[in-house]
Length: 250
Image 1 (tube, one colour):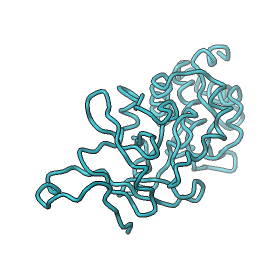
Image 2 (cartoon, rainbow, N blue to C red):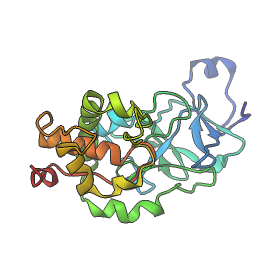
Image 3 (cartoon, rainbow, N blue to C red):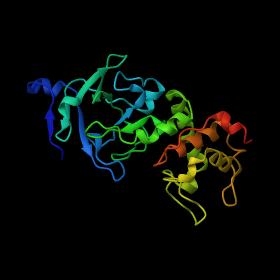
Image 4 (cartoon, rainbow, N blue to C red):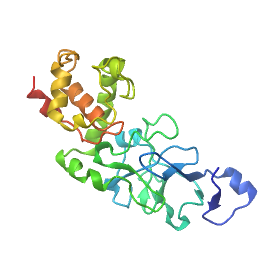
């Protein structure tokens, strides 16, 4: 278990009991390396548009990416830099925990400690290392610039994609994109073929020799959502697909 070091002055026991704490820890990851987590092991993310300042994630964005809030002291694992831990005030007056100036968030789709399914989503969301490095951000710059889309637009499309995927795709590919039913059903997770957005759209709409097409079952919005969801989840970091991009393949 991590040993935590108090970052602000030690208060009396009664005051401590009445204060809400936000704790920061460090956890390893096979692909991402050591990164900052909550003391329960939930992965924490930074949002690149925040640019190490005030949070820009509100409304639907904050529903998908809940900010890490604190009403009092922040406790940090000994592997972290205590001078880099702080808070920033949100529009509603609540205090969001920051590390090296970056406001910290969890991800609603991470359903258990250790999951990092938000890594690279939309080219904007990344885990942060104990030394303050935003892990994987540099590698995604080119992909993030390919499709201009606001974060609210992306989050809404991503959520639509989750619903459509679970309705028509999960039965074969699995809820996490990592299942196969036969030698002809490939895993979606960590699949470089998803880099070709046109190929993904065609597959979803028209199918192929072993995969049925879902063009009659899904509208353009849902196809774009599915394509966006699978291209930005489970180790894939290929960017979103717009609804209008789907229409030309009908």
